[in-house]
Image (cartoon, rainbow, N blue to C red; front, side, top):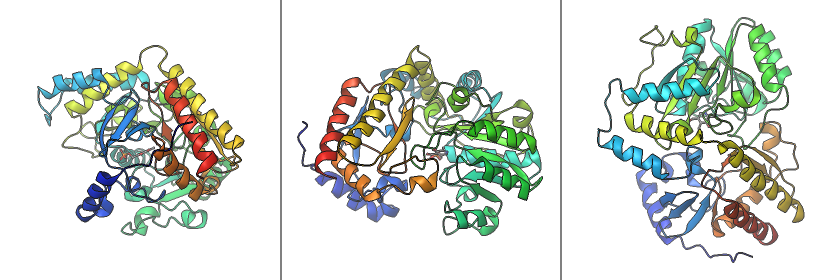
Length: 434
Ligand SMILES: Cc1ncc(COP(=O)(O)O)c(C=O)c1O
């Protein structure tokens, strides 16, 4: 059995205390503050392969992977070498760059729905842009999103996930005008009937449906059989567009993303995370007739000072090249299956209700009897138990996402031995500290 290390976090605590005076909540993005698991956040110093080290010298096996991009493992030597070469040519051109062609061609070759692509700097930007394009193409203003799905922090996607409030389109955050979210309709994930009703109630007004084809932002929730196919049929029946937000699933659950995995082809797709290989990137793409509306080819405006940045393009190209090697997704699938099934087995053995699963290198589990089909089900999880589990795993050298409502990620750098050690830690924590 792995011995519990009494984590020494003096340096982390000092740095985080100082950070709180400098930045709201001490962080640059909210989940990092550990609010939902309690305790002080760990401040990190470096990453390599499947591991991450904090500023006190503690080493953890990392299942966050920078929230998805680190699919080849952190600091992959080939990515770093390519970045060194690119750095020597400069960090930003603000002008066309050949590397954009290379990554664009790779994305177009891989993702079935994409005939043309535009690079941006984040998943948020990609989703904002795609919404404008959906509205411009259809001439309609309303859009359907699903409760618990996250499409970045743009105003019109910040709609409360609670059902009654959600259907009224009330904003999720102060500062978001009701007028902006009133055109955002919401339905429970995996509920085709709710989508049908919204289309009936808003005839010829809905531009389209945007969905995380596998939810990762309410914890890991896979689509029920026929759900994505149903969305495809309903949107087509109503002359609306279907958008897969593959910022998380793109190049993660299959090289061609969820659309390749499930064989359902949307009209438009958003990407991010993996295609930037750890540098800031996003992208959106789709059929040529729709993408041709984007400026300067068309009149739908969207721009970016750093878009198509040569460093981000380089890291993305090298990452996709590495992912093209035979056996990549089989390896991720086998490893993640061992982890996800192992976790559930241990929870069962130790008397904790749990539900979860995985698709390729994306996984999740809830302290919840299950099945978890949507956000309402996910919210039934025992959050304080998850918080204790999270802390226990940290103390055993395992870094999980600091929230029950986030999917986990494995990488090509994780080994069977890493998973064995993680499961040993989970067993120890489930027996003793939760
Ligand atoms: C599915 C999905 N869409 C959009 C975003 C927003 O991307 P970014 O954080 O790069 O703005 C995320 C981020 O986690 C995401 O998971």
